[in-house]
Image 1 (cartoon, rainbow, N blue to C red):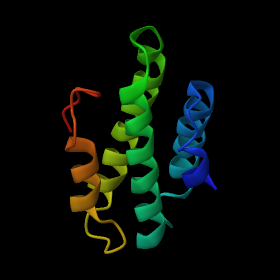
Image 2: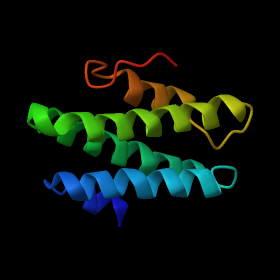
Image 3: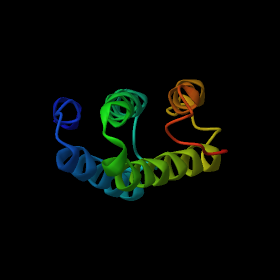
Length: 106
């Protein structure tokens, strides 16, 4: 599962998880249920933990991909706020936690 793989300490694996998660959200965000969004939030937290531990020279590619993933997720949330299956408070809590990793404004 993505959640287990997102705990892997290898940067290339984390990068692939980010890309796969982006594809999943792009394709299925309209049909994702609350429990599935919770899993995505857990994965995002795992990825953020990994990014914190990266050496500076490897950070920029993964951080840029993570930034794109946060932006995509934020766009999905703002586009479909009235739907009850999206927990915007939890999502923005994940995004806002430790913004030094990803200086974005949503």
